[in-house]
Amino acid sequence: MSDGGAARSAGVEPGESHERVGAFVDAVFAIAMTLLAVEIPRPPAELVESDAPRMVLAARLWDFLGGDWSTWMAFVIAFLILWGVWRHHHRTLDLVTRVTRRVMRWHVPLLLVVVLLPYATGLIGETVRNPLAVCLFAGTVAALLLSQAGLLRAIVGDGALRPGANGRAMRVQAGTLAVVGVFWLATAGLTWMMDGVVFLWLLGPVVGGVAARAIGRIVPS
Image (cartoon, rainbow, N blue to C red; front, side, top):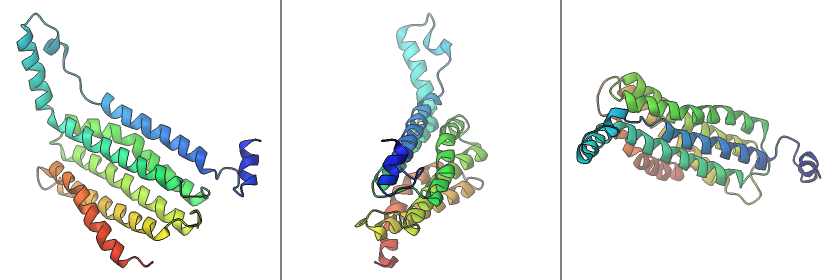
């Protein structure tokens, strides 16, 4: 039976199968996470290929890697964010019966910022003191989190959840992602007024935990 026939037999219209959407999203995330490493600057050839003694070459390379701490920090943060959003998205699609048009539309900004994040990560690694580079990275992460929040709200609002799935928990998750997204937007603004904003990003999980508990108290059952 064709994919369209299988979808209709399961009560799902062609183009609304969450399996095909999930497979495509998985591929996009996998490519983006791989490109994060590609964007890490490589040392100049003279640092690693010369007639200098081995210990001197090793010291030069160590200085290069240590002096490029912002690149590694941005890489780790971006990788963990992509991993977390992908895992969350993967679990979410396991809870839906179909992908509605509104849910599909939310995938456009979501995947757009996913493929943009490696570029923003490489940019901030090379120019960490440039406020525009920091703002672009923080804004991209914020857009990613807010898009995921909108996707969750669309799933609940369109009644696309499987019977028995916890819609309240998904609303709490959407609210938490929105709060953390606003936190990243705030850091994007702060970077124009102060240095060291990149260290504030380490508070993201704390902000998310506090937001989840607070939103969990106010979202009705």
